[in-house]
Length: 479
Ligand code: ATP
Ligand code: MN
Image 1 (cartoon, protein in one colour):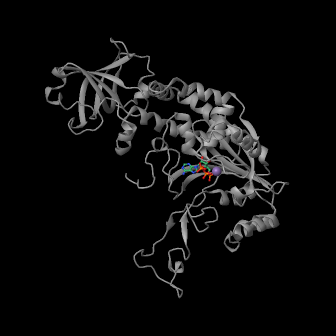
Image 2 (cartoon, protein in one colour):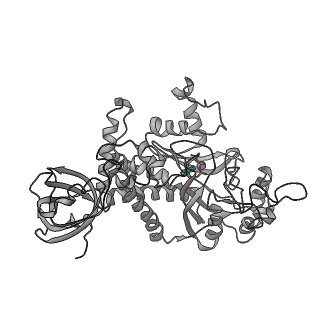
Image 3 (tube, helix red, strand yellow):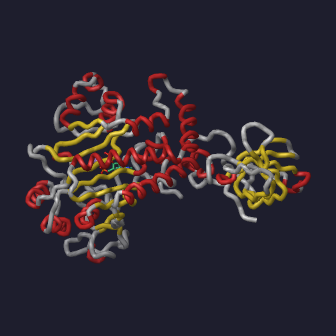
């Protein structure tokens, strides 16, 4: 007999048929002799209830059908007698595939803290919360590819190991096969990377953008969706050392086209989740609402599904960095010096507290900020006519702060060279990047969307370590 996936089984209208299901015990109720066993196989948030009469199934397995054990159950699917579920299986053949000693199994059917679950990340897939997050994460990955494929973009695999550290600014993980205890030295006594695996110093990439630009300037519309690595020591709820980034790059797009694409994409992702992840979102929403009850009324946030609909239905606010600075300077927390970083004037880099003030307190909507001071942004962003600002755009989201960072790229060779000199970016190392500006250069734009930041928003979770299966963060590389 073929196994039926529980998600498919629960769509059945056709009762009194024989079925075979396999999965893990989530809960066991009832009496010693007749148990109601809730089984889950990961296919959906819901369990199937199995009624087991041990007098018939064999008393030797009575103790073994415990929370965490894996079962194979053959039986008859019937309309359920009890409330709470539409159907159940009356077991006729039951095999315990693997037991789970109740004295040792860490996941009991009660509420565990997210911190505790982080310590047992190898088992947390077996909870409702992480099952829901894992399914939503999959749906979002799929939606990214669908969105771009439907628009005629090409996916580019950009390298994970890179020799350019133009963007890294000291935040890169080195890749080397040299003996770190005794590396070869050159005449000056410096480590001789010529003897390293690639014959030069290499790192894990912080972004696929530069290579995506090369592809865009021939293929038109491309995107990368790969892992990126940052050795920044920021132990926050929004930073990982290894995260996934979606980076579209489009030839002939200006900054407005770039904003339009990013806004369309974010709304598409949110809508995709609303349309395809209803059960899991409902579960997470309820979980959040229980959590919110412990907060003061004015600190509670919007219900998850309502929040997602709100983002999908409303235009993002677009304004310049200069306008944002004026709002922030005149804001209450700035005047009362409540910000950790008080905004003194134009030129200040925005911290996440400022970004969140704009989004959560002032506009109460997602915000796209453009035209930042050139000093605080990367070398490749296009300089505006004022020669003070660049065509950068950051998208700020409630509860998150920056979710997207992008720009129109500097396509003019002379301006780019001048800027690289001013910012100490070695020209020789970037010859291949500069060639695109030497041969058939065109205006083009792109952005980077942090996939886990998007996941934070869509799931309503508060810590980025809970929206990636195996988080990497300072002092954390278990599993
Ligand atoms: P932040 O100021 O929040 O540290 P950033 O300016 O360093 O971000 P970018 O270099 O612009 O970020 O990267 C593009 C996007 O990648 C960001 O908008 C964000 O969504 C995501 N991102 C950046 N750093 C991290 C990180 N350490 N962990 C997870 N996502 C990140
Ligand atoms: Mn940024």
